[in-house]
Image (cartoon, rainbow, N blue to C red; front, side, top):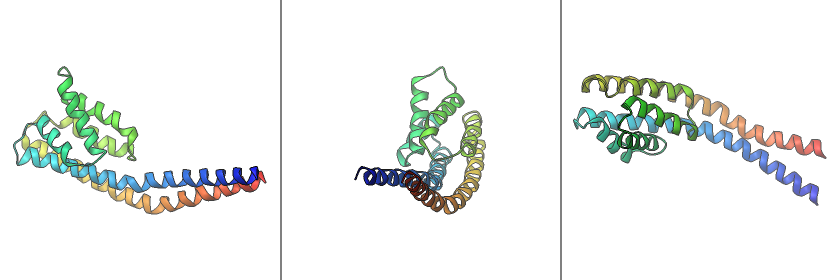
Length: 172
């Protein structure tokens, strides 16, 4: 009886590990899409609303979903709380802090870091150009993420179950 319960727990744990890994692959394209939407909102606020950058970030964070909203809120909070920090430092610190809670990879973070180094130091038209460039790069990353999700999500689900089955067979 104890062996049967142990086998069931091992099978359950292996299956859950596979499903968690698969969900990271499946959520990455959605998170990139939310990031693109956040940058689109930011572009609209800057370009058409003539909104100053800190206020545009605050407004945009209210209109998007996580994790993009969390990053923008963190940037706004850092701008408000730390007057001695530059916009670039606030942006980079927020991105580094939020990143472990996302399914996104270093390539998306690199795009955001490059964007953060150019926002706030030039005129409105130049900022819009940099936002559009970042969105194009993120669209390319989203396509790659979709391909990875379709390729690896099913594999991780199967791998979790099969590995757990192998462990159960080896134990018995």
